[in-house]
Structures are given as structure tokens and as C-alpha cells.
Length: 323
Image (cartoon, rainbow, N blue to C red):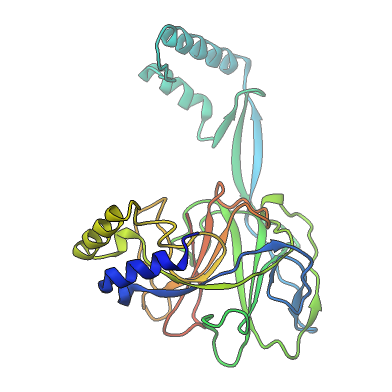
């Protein structure tokens, strides 16, 4: 993580960056035993005593395996032998198929997602409803007192994020959700009348079960992805970085990890402006949920789940994005 002096020096030397600074809170989850009264990852939440625990009925992506015929298995063996023969003696061999081999392989796959080369099985992912539903699991609870910049609607003072711990695709109302991942639900609460509640964990997939963690919030200035800066300002920033034997980007900008507020990075795609579905305002980054580290999640291949909120009304629907 860059020290405050690095960011302060950049801002002092390039004053044109000042309008682009956003406040962010690095949540810094650490393995621990949080209570429902705390801001935390995983674990029990504060919950209305008369509100049923939410469930997701899907459809959820379920793995279906299909055994290949003996003829298809023999065809794949012949293709593998031919590829190995072509690779022999090359300094940097690549797995190359002829057009005919590629067509045969495509026919054998028959639209399946992947091939289990050991078991010689096609693997498909099919959306299947789940009744009576999969209980959502708590991901994050934040109190306004711990994250001062947190935008909350009305007189609420707690933000809760839950998700369905199963694979989903093409979530309704989420046009920026590119890739497979969990379906997210967000609640805004008043802490005072709530009681502790622990969820069930049936039908959960381990990559989406966060280990309970306490938080060590740290407020920091955050700067945008290079592609979100005007060309003239970016040139000035890059000249500063070159003079200081640095590179503009992470970690100087788009602070990584679990984060409230700040700027999103666009390390996997081009920047994608995300609009509020209710009012059309350009949404801003609300939360980043990261893979790995103490919570032990694996989102979109060790990526990030980002939640974007409306800057006009934080009660408007949240938009999701995976990177």
C-alpha cells in the first residue's frame, strides 16, 4: 500500500487531480470472532425479528456431466497424438489444431462448457430452479459510525450485503454483471430495533462462504483508473510517475481490497459507465468485495465483486459488476 506521503506528493505536484479525489475506506478484514453488533465480514447479522431469512430460488447453474462415446474418445485421442507430433522438436510448442480437427472437437463438445480430459466427459452448466430456495449468507455488515463516507438512505445507519452462495448467470436487472457469480441482496437498516440472527448454510458453495472477520477501517484518498482521466491530465500524471520511478495505477490509484467508496479499477475490461436504472445518473462505486485474504472468497476467478450505487439517491437499486 502506498504511504500517504506518496499520494500527497502526487496531489501537491499535480493539482489538476484534486477534483478527481474520492474518499475511500479500506475495510481490511482480519480473521476474528465478530458479533452481530459489529461491522464485519461473515458471521451473524442484526435482523428484524419478524422478517423471514431471505432465500434464492435461482435458477442456479448446476454442473451436468455427459460421458463421451467410444468413437468420440478415440477421435480426441487421435487429435492429441497429431498435436503432439506437430509439437515435437519445437522450442516453444503450442497446442495447435488444424481447421478439420477444430471442427471435429467442436462437434464432440456439442456446445458444452468444458471437457474433463481425464474422465473424458463433457461438462455443461445448466440453470435449474431450487425449491424451497437457497438461504442467503451474510457477506458484509457496515455501521455508519465505522465508515463515515458510507451513503445511506433516510435515517438508516446499517448497510448489509448478503448473497446466494451458488453460481448465477445473467441476473435480472443487472446488465453489467459479466460472468458467473453470486446473486446479491442489499439491505439498509436502523440498528436500534434489530436482534442477532445466524443464517442457515445449506446448498452453499465454499468459494462464496466468507470466513468471519473483524474490520480495521482506514480512510484514504483514492484516485481514478488512468483511463478515466483526461488525456492531458494523464500525460502530466505519467510524467510525474516517471520522474519518481513509479507508475500511475494500482496501488497509487483504485485502491485494491475490500473497500467502501473510492474508484473502481478496470483491470479486466475497458471502463464501463454504469447508470442508475431508476434516474439515469452515473453510478459510483459503493463497495468492493475482494477474493482471497482472510475472508477466503473466490469471486470470478480470484476477482472482485463491485457494487455501484446512485449518487442522487442511495435508496435506488444497486448495480453489480465483476472484474
